[in-house]
Length: 258
Picture (cartoon, one colour):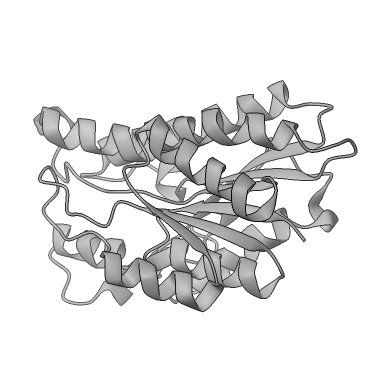
């Protein structure tokens, strides 16, 4: 199996993805900030959480900001030194801020989302794709980024978040064209309302007592599990998905079907 980097791996979808990739036989390098961001009004994953995931998955780990190219390069170096190279990169790190009408969004909120959601994806690609291209032909490289179903819906109070997730979608689909013929695919997954700390933050935005109320937006009226999103990531990283590239895969309980 392959060698994979997963960002945002301390908790939520990133942690579930790391576990699923490990169970599928992949070797891992995990990245997380493990430090709160003063621009955000909620706590980030911790070093203890990242270490727990790394122990569960027998992974190497890098603590650092995904928006910093050097953080991603450190992870690629670890992949080369420990496992001999890199085959898979998963851009899972994401944050939400500026939960106000679009015109009231402040600079800190915008730059926080732009940095993690967009720049973090771009810098992972800049570090990881050259390493994937070092693999001999025929390759089976995979780049998967986590966007959001919100990128396709008109949703109040989330214009900045939606814009950054739409940027992820456009960047990765265009990168898939650049990668044509290399054996490396690039795809996006668009989760619906998934039971993570970020969803609990969203519930507070709308004054909801329980995040499960978001399930009403799904055709399948329940919250999704991070393991369900992770399963889709693992499939896109498999040989069975070799013909899938430049695609946005909704894993959203039918949220965007209507």
